[in-house]
Length: 142
Image (tube, rainbow, N blue to C red; front, side, top):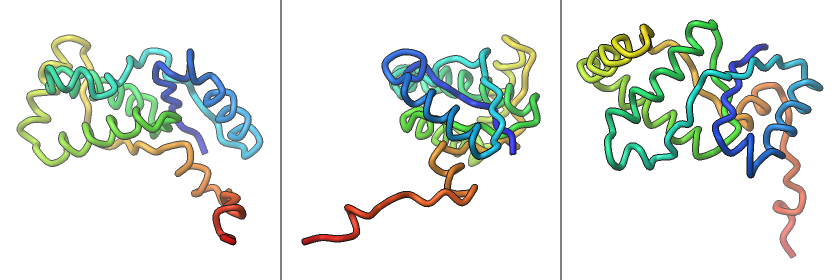
């Protein structure tokens, strides 16, 4: 299995342990990761508060990059995962809006988001590969 790894901005700074853990776990499980070095920050919801369309164009660009690689996206940050899924659902629900976003995206980058990429969180990928979380302390209450 192979994924486009979306590190976001946190994994390269304050949350470096996320990136190190994901890389090590995926290596041990035989999951190949291709880091999305050209992807921008998802905006963490902040951009969308001021200008939702700019946020959607920014994230559609990331989705289009993964599509051009023929890969689904694996996020390692919960915030990025939420922002990406929200943007993706918004674009899927409104084809006319997606056309407007794509028109701006094409004008600025020459890219187009086709709606084919799947966006998964690292934990979801682990579960799909048969890794079971250790819940021992949470399952046994005194």
